[in-house]
Length: 261
Image 1 (cartoon, rainbow, N blue to C red):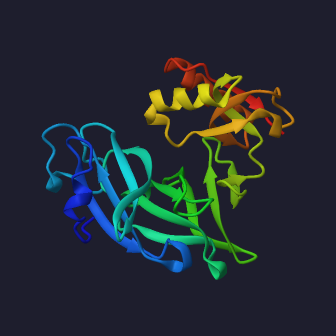
Image 2 (image 1 turned 180 degrees about the horizontal axis):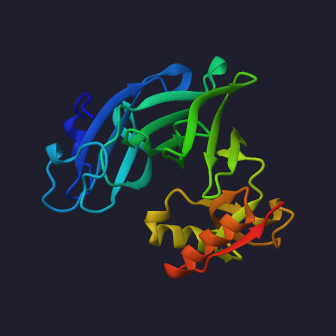
């Protein structure tokens, strides 16, 4: 992805070894004021900009940073972190409610052809506040429409088939914080603690899980109240949720599945 070069003052703030990928301006500020969006990554040592292309072109999954900057003066306002192993197609901007220009959504498409994933950086409280990162994968047997509308609001529609050739569909609606599937009542959970700070600390120490969701359990009838938890995935199918929890356990994470609603 080749876009306008980021200002030198912006590039100087990158972490050691960082490669600047793009710099674009979008009307994200108050009253549609333009803000800068800087995307950069920290690839394995020795990687050059021309080495980074679509698909799996990095030797290891690497941190990508999406930063929001004011333009006058140049000042970093917020930053989002996720991990990828290749370059993205040009960034696009959408709105949960386009008529009101409410809740901006930055969309990054990674992968080649029919296989890859969308990374969403959305701003439930506006672009001046910390963003939320979400990920949606797609493949030959799993398609997702990122431009659906329902009552004028942005929604995402996913359709896929499992190994038994059974078809599933999901509609992801914005719930005030992120896009969720109301039918996905089985949660794949990880660390669960009494305080939000403990869960946030775990996520900070495990940045590969930057797209995981942090929840307060009292908001979900099926979960024990009074706790905070990491949700790695919301699923419609119990067996799939249980299988994903086992994957977490094998990786050394205390994962479990639970019906949340």
